[in-house]
Structure formats: structure tokens, C-alpha cells
Length: 284
Image (cartoon, rainbow, N blue to C red; front, top):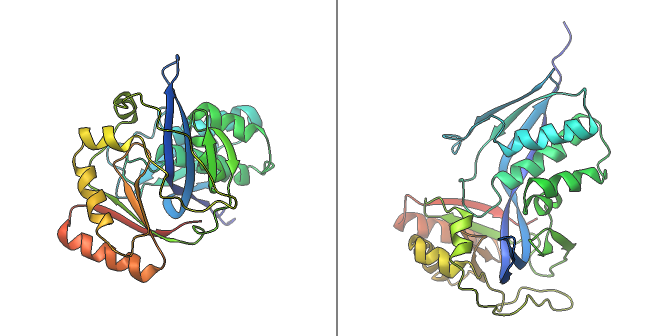
């Protein structure tokens, strides 16, 4: 009896926004932003093996309530890639959902991007095929950055990307904390006060800058006060060298010089807030 093909595996890296400057509201309802994406070593996990058609199963701590049907971005990414590049191919896909939903750290966008990378390998497609970026752009504004999964600046809707080498973040210990609330992106953007507070400036060479903002933090905190509690808890850790909310929330993060400082912060925060979700990781 022939051995069953071994499943391939891909990480959907958790995304954080080191900066998110909202510049203006566009006529089409979107917002023009200037953002700096960075990615964690950890995240959701996808596996795939050859099959006659396309199928998805979902497990993991945040699987409840997620549909494995056509509305899932994993299936949408797989269907679009197959239609354009491998019409005879199929895959049995498994998504292990480790990241909370609607939490500002990539979520479905990272899953869709990881699906494109995973099926490119499974179906023996060129890794540098330009159709991957085009498919990613049609799936959502954050999907192109998640496809790269490397530090990059995003302009426009966040999908006009330029890779950035930050001198003081690669390999940094990072702690992600979420108070357990799901935050829909649309209402947070709608709550932005419309004030342009200035563009995103990068040093040469680029380094972390305390002037970097997340302009969505104020409307997110107003709607979900627990976000403020998370930021306060992280900012209280003296070893935290950079603290921000990611995306439209509710996940916030802190960067540390080493794992020991990060872990000590996580243990202290967990004692005071045992219901909060946390991820200890490092930046890619």
C-alpha cells in the first residue's frame, strides 16, 4: 500500500502595526494610511495535502464559530489560486486557529496569505509568480503584507508596500495581549476624528521611533475601554521599550530586549488579568 502523501505546513504569522497613521478618508469609503507592518514568528498554522477537490477543516482554541465554507478567506484564496494557476489541482486544508478573531493582528488576512504560500508549494507553482500578489490584493488590504510576512511600509490602503530593514527590531521579544473582545474594523475607522496628525517618518537607517502613532487607538479605546487597560498594563512594565495597539485593536503589544523581560511581564500581567489572551513570540 502506497504511503499517504505527507502534509505540508505553513505558519500564518501574527501581524502587528508598529505605526498606523491615518491621513484622510477617501471618497470610496476607505482611508489613506501610512503604516509599518512587522510579523511574529508564531500565529495560526495551516496544513495541506493533495486531494481531488478543495476542503477545509478548522480546529484550535479559536475555531468556534468559524465557517469552513466559501466565506472563509482560506477557501477564497485557494479557489482563486486554483482557478488562475492550477485548475486541475486540489487540496485538503487544515487550519489550526491559534489567534483570536477580529483582534488587529492579521487573522483571516494572514490565513489567506499563508494559504497562497502553502498551495504554491503543494501544487509546484513558482514562488515568485506575480499572480500571487494580484490575488492577495483582491482578497483584502492586509493580505499583500501578510503574503510577504516581513517588515514593510504600507501606503495607500496599506497595500502599496516597500520592505524596510529596522535596525533594532529583528528578533526582538514581543508580547501580544488581548482583553478578550472582538473589535470589528469598520466602526473603529468610522470613529476616527478626521484629523491628519502627520505622516510616517523613517530615519536613515530606520529605527524604532516614539513619534510613531496608531491613530485608531483613540476611537478603539472609546468603544472598548478594556484596550486602555491593556495598554496601561504593558506600559507599566519598565522593561517594555515600545508599546502600541495593533491595527484596529483590541490586541496590543510590547517589545522587549530579551525573552526573560518579556516572560516576566507576561507572568505579572497574567496574575492580575487571568482572562486575557497572551502570545509570547519574537519578531521575524
